[in-house]
Image (tube, rainbow, N blue to C red; front, side, top):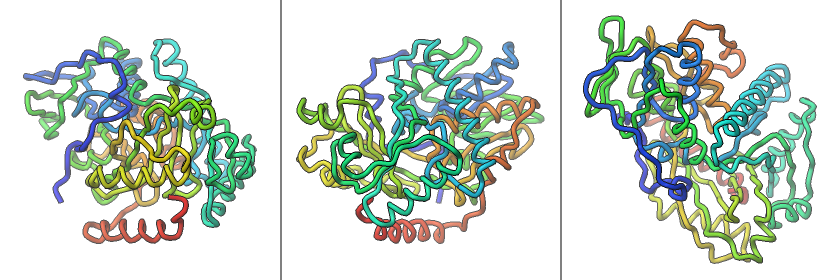
Length: 429
């Protein structure tokens, strides 16, 4: 299988389509030099660039983005900014490590919130907290495991019966739930484009500039695009699983596509019952559906996975509609305004692939759906490592990505595991 240098999407990003037009930065052209080139204009890439610029304000910093900002994966996520561990990451038996991770997440979230407020980025940032919910026995077991973690860690939460949860989110679909206050919701495309348009002048962003080749040139690296080249002392790969095309270990990273859709603004009677407030719900079971509302009274659903390539979006859209109508039968037939796919980098054990992979070539990949806050911290830490500054013990905190078998075994394993889990948790999906 040929490794792609950047994702390919069948449909534009819905979040991005609602934003006002912005001035796109010019593509890389001709010959140039820089102290550091960063591949990928996402949360990880911007955090690395900002950390580098603060440490060395006179350095030339270039960021290469394959698409226009907001159309890539950073704009296609669901906009959850978690201050504590994901349900799938929580380990009650590792409280000291999880406590350190939670503290780092809170610090990073505080810095992001301060930046949004200071720069005046209009991204609908809201301290909403988040719900977890379960319907089936397997979902309830996952929910109980997360509750055990919250209890052991001394974190605040509320348990909710199905009826209490229904009062909050407008559906009786779930039998049990809990609420954690440690989450913000954001319009992700508005956040990432706002960060792009607020970069310091010393950071040069080039959109529509997919890197095609990164090769050593003496003690430096030559980064090529279709229209230009840049010679750099250091290169940071912040393009998740697509870093495999430039030297990241393909035996530890896989690209997974997931899918989301957002309704038209709900009718007033439904909006008052379902979307009177901005809320978000993460599934107790990893294959369950993510739900959230928006500031303008829409309802979003995210669910479904495919391996390395996007599935047919029309077929996926039908499945998303069926899942949403099962939860909210009184708004059927659901009318989606936008539906799209997006990628995440997956590792077998959920740990990131992070660090220096060749002299002066660095990578942060394998976010495993960890999202905005985690990616921001790891990007900042990677820049500090590349600059020779003190860095937290990333391997001890997050672990290290483990080996996965090659294709076709890997592909077969993904589909078999997905099908088994989907059958076991059918009512959660």
